Amino acid sequence: MSRYQEKSVHRQLLFEKAGFSILTVLTILTVLPIIAVVIYVIVLGSSAISWDFIFEMPMDGMRAGGIWPAIVGTFYLTLGTAIFSVPLGVAAAIYLSEYAADNQVTRTIRLAIINLAGIPSVVYGLFGLGLFVIFLNFGTSILSASLTLSIMTLPVIISTTEEALSAVPQSFRVVSVSLGATKWQTIRRMVLPQALPGILTGIVLGLERAAGETAPILFTGAAFFLPRLPNSPLDATMALPYHLFVISTQVPGMPIQIQYGTVMVLLFFVLIMNLIVTVIRSRARARRQW
Amino acid sequence: MDKIVVENLSLKYSDGTESLFNINMNIKANLITALIGPAGGGKSTFLRMMNRLNDLADVKEVTGKVLIDGENVLDPDIDVIALRRKVGIVFSRPLPLPLTIYQNLTYGLELAGEKRRSVLDEAVERSLKLAELWDEVSDRLKDPASALSGGQKQRLCLARSLVLEPEIILLDEPTSALDPVATAKIENSLVELKKQYTILIAPHNTQQAGRIADDVAFFLQGKLIEFGPTEIIYTRPTDQRTQDYITGKFG
Ligand SMILES: Nc1ncnc2c1ncn2[C@@H]1O[C@H](COP(=O)(O)OP(=O)(O)O)[C@@H](O)[C@H]1O
Ligand SMILES: [Mg+2]
Image (cartoon, rainbow over all chains, first blue to last red; front, side, top):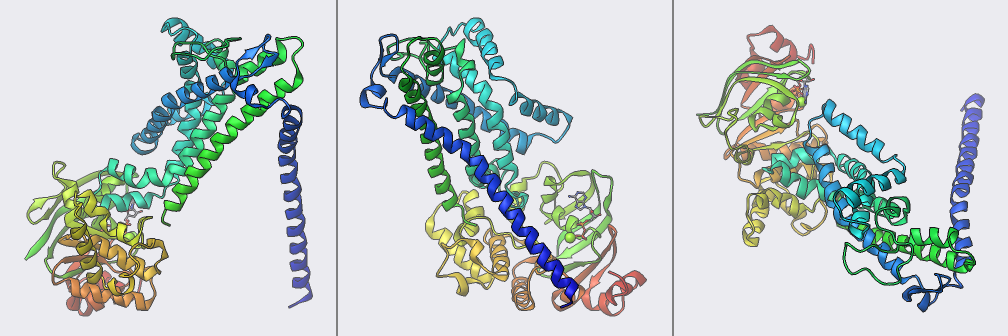
């Protein structure tokens, strides 16, 4: 090997090492704030966590007691959002990715969906107020709030599902059809199972955002203080993010550990959703035979 | 006996390329008919017309007829699903579905409504034997098909098209991704299979056509230049372009 070659190889290795170190540092810098936030919340909030804090009604102007109605409310709202947005979003994505012709109309719809994902959440809140609360007369209710959150969540579910569908190799579709499958059989038996992990990821990303949002439920379903559990979808409800907003800004003399305890519960809620999906996803991956 | 009769078949893709131009061809039953010619000649397009797989492609215009057992399969009203069960296809890259070996074979049968375990088991064994793969995989049918070697995968794909008991098998350069040993295995199977099936193959080179084909059709830029028994096409073709292609002057 000539001297010149030796030198250039050496330099390349040096570059590679430097690049690798920079990437490592950047990764740590990205993860660090997240870890810091979690530790901060745990330090300040863990003293508030107890059986009563989770399962009791709030008392003394929310300065004592528990946050059970807010936990239940957020659960209902997330469930309601899932009921409306998951079937609709997945169906829309299947239509766009597998059936719609690739023309100007489809491209415009796709662009609109991507842009919808960027609209500030308060705009959805006002839209929900006008459409569901007032015009359709659902009132300030879990139903109105879930529908509003669904509209906000749909674009996320549609675009991630579409992406997951288009990641399934075209050749599987051709083979399936060549074996006498109809288009729908091909989608149901070949494409959807392959795309499932990606679809689930999209659903959870969307629902997590819905679970943590305040603005869309502010005018459509969230109650300032309602120390009982909702009886029907037409009841208003307390919800964790809005409760947090209220106790952090609207109630004087609020003990700080109650605020951070509430944050901890909300974080935990989202974490559980992540966990469930991770399990389902790894199951789906294990069943995937390739 | 003519199994397939192609009459004045022309095809244009939506980008305007005329990929088949007025093809007339009578393909006999129980023979291996090879479609040869340089890339882009329309061989794959022609094969995909036989089982209407071109329905999935961006085709602008098709004229003419493809009669299989006297029925025009280009007629929009025919049962395409039944057609695809009758006309199987093997692609150039081995494309097992992301399933087990067993499931790859039963996929088409289950779609056809077959649920009886014994029938499925029997069909799997029969088709694997026809594709000369049974001995190698009989003890690991539940393994993912992706665990097979390239040559085994391609024989699995052949078995998968046979499992539906087709009458015609299309093969589009089935050995282009395989080594000589795996290629020879496929070729042997095909020679055996032609007793029961009508085989249409785009071989991956002219030597392969010479080894296994009974009839040869030479396609050039969407036109059928010459068609006849292999020994005539290979020894005394009437068209200079056929002569040039076979002697390797272009390709
Ligand atoms: N799906 C398609 N869409 C548009 N053009 C195509 C498509 N498939 C093939 N073609 C065009 O048709 C011509 C014939 O291609 P093909 O049938 O693949 O030939 P061969 O198999 O002989 O190489 C080529 O010019 C090719 O570019
Ligand atoms: Mg080809």
